[in-house]
Amino acid sequence: MQYRAWFSPVDGSPGRWPLHEVIYRAPSGALLEVEHDHQALRARSPAAWMRLFEERYLRTQWPHGSGVWGKKEWVQPHIADENIVSLLEGGTNLFWAERYGHQLGVPDLWIKQCGTSHTGSFKDLGMTVLVSSVKQMIAEGKPIRAVACASTGDTSAALAAYGAAAGIPVIVLLPRAKVSAAQLIQPIANGAIVASLDTDFDGCMRVVQRLTQDSTIYLANSMNSLRVEGQKTISIEIVQQFDWEVPDWVLVPGGNLGNVSAIAKGFDQMLDLGLITKRPRLVCCQAKQANPLYLAYLKAKAAGRPIALEDFEPVVAGPTLASAIQIGNPVSLPKAVAALGRFDGIVEQADEAELANAAARADRTGMFNCPHTGVALACLEKLVAANTITRGDRVVVISTAHGLKFTEFKTRYHQGQLGFSTPHANLPVELGHDPGQVVDALHRVLDERTS
Ligand SMILES: *Cc1c(COP(=O)(O)O)cnc(C)c1O
Image (cartoon, rainbow, N blue to C red; front, side, top):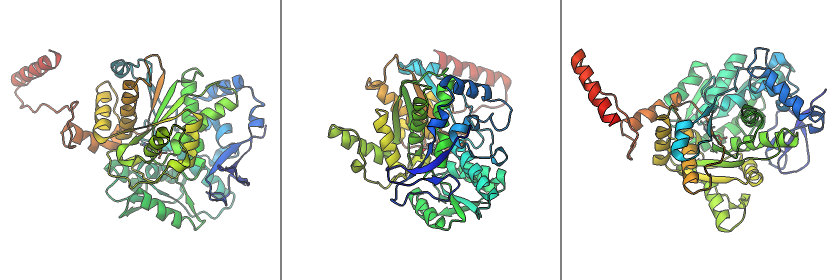
């Protein structure tokens, strides 16, 4: 069976382009999306797709053991297996947050640990697709000299790793002093050309669009809709992990808004191909310091209608601990607005104290959350308090990065250096070396904690 896919404009304007073409926007200026030949995909029954995905899941046969490439026919069917650049992304833990969920009053709470991956964030899922596509284009003779991105940290780490694995030069543009030490050292270690610019993410985005006007430098930002194809497998994987049942809610932190649209796309594709029969409700979770979508949502809500593009105005994003979503003018806004419409979506926000305390509170139940996941958890806590999300609901929170990439954030939290009160802080007990005194002191601390 020949499965086909192509780029088409999201605004419904005419045109379709092959996926190996270097193109990021339609002539109308609209974003593109990858469209699949669903008629061909329908030739296989829903049950047969489920069986195929199950057979491949986390197995060793190249490249199908990857959570992304196990769904290759739905992602990028035309890529030759020898051009796939995979670091075995996906297949991440769907963690039952039993203790935290009980504390909140939502016992059926699950955290999709997408940050447990090669570069420590869920950006690996999209980057394997983009870099594999570039490798295929180069193999077909396209004159691509390098791949470039603007980044709030995680995109550049993923691009640098996949580029290095493929032997393709990488250029990353980072806003100076706005990414974590771990995020900065990753592309440096992988040998990328790392440009530290005296601006914010939105400024880096403007520069990379200029840089990639030269078609030999390929643009890796999420404006490039190839990445959405990898990110959307999060939804398919979640449903698969629930034995093909759809949760009631999916919460995801949102900055540039490519991911909220990707998650919607994964569910829509399953719905259209008959693997599921309903949609979950989507919640896009923003940091209050970078909340243009939330402001648009409030405006629409006050007017008593669904969110629309006209409600939106860009903002200058303020500094936030959730640095990967410090974005004031999200590129994928039109896709996200459409997705929220289809999924009866909600936009919620969390301030700095709320996101940090939610992350720390959940850490006390066995997690190790990054600040963006903290935003989503804080929004969850608010929606539960408002009785929007209720006790019987099955809820999934997308954890987008590994906490180990954000140790400065955690250190400052526990040292009480964040400028707000940190009730879940936990400091080491400083002791000498005398065994008797140490043991006595530890008994005292244990007694205090358990009394
Ligand atoms: C990229 C990223 C996000 C947000 O995804 P968008 O598509 O930009 O909305 C959230 N969390 C982390 C850790 C990220 O790297």
